[in-house]
Image (cartoon, rainbow, N blue to C red):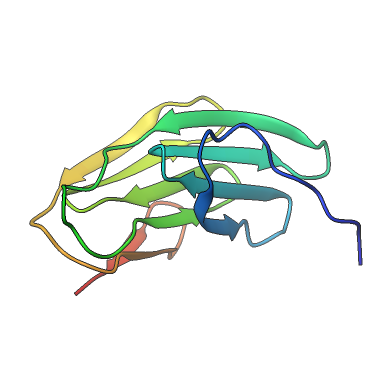
Length: 116
């Protein structure tokens, strides 16, 4: 097992962390409404995005999922998918309010959202 790596850059503590299936990248959502992606073997920050904040009084956290070259984030009213390498938004969908977002990539162009 490798050593412990400290992820830096997000300005408030992380509230959700996930890893790519191959273990080469890590994504973290912070309470400052940022999602950051790190390249773990190279120990470098790849990219940071600002994401929509939750509505005041909303319950349930964001959903974050990371593939090798893509990241998906679901907030209370929006789900977005970005290309990690270019920073380009691949798609964005407006949602009705919901709770308890959980995301999973199900192939190269499919992002599944589970929520209450």
